[in-house]
Figure (tube, rainbow, N blue to C red):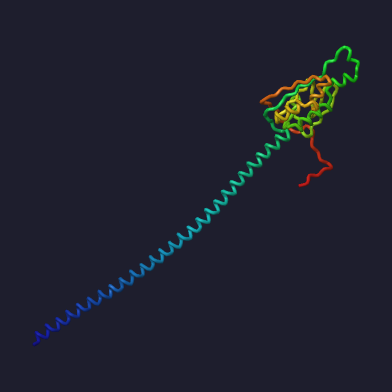
Length: 243
């Protein structure tokens, strides 16, 4: 009986040991499962944070691109504005006479008429056959009204401020004494200029009737130099510019 009891006790001990081991493994498995869940939660939280960061960066990227497009558009508009200003500056320089210009037009060459032996003492005939500053002023005004865009006399550019007056045998323009013959170079609408010169009422035709030598030619390429600066200073003492 004692041997049987010992066997029973041994079997019970073995069973208790097996149960203890199984319970320990189950407990350990449960702990492993809890740790894995925690790790998963951490990784999921990290993933969600990364997704949030990506979304935020995408939104910032869109904003940056919009700003970049705005800056590019502003820069393009600024470049356009600068180009327009430069074109306007060139145009104004050309109109003001400070820039060289080239184009088609006409060339008028004038010289005092020759005096015959019988006319030398006739003051009226002498006056009519002589070119005066008033003649030049009338011709300049009529040329401007007939399509002239740039005018030069003996290479001297005619400006809005140019003075034209007689200096004995010379005509002074922009402070420069110019001798005869007077070569008037005109760039502009050739058709209008030709029509003006063909008119019996044009002053160039009328001055020819007075005995002044006049020769007119057309040219496809005339170059008129710009001035180095206004030789007649522009001073406004009484007139104030108003915007």
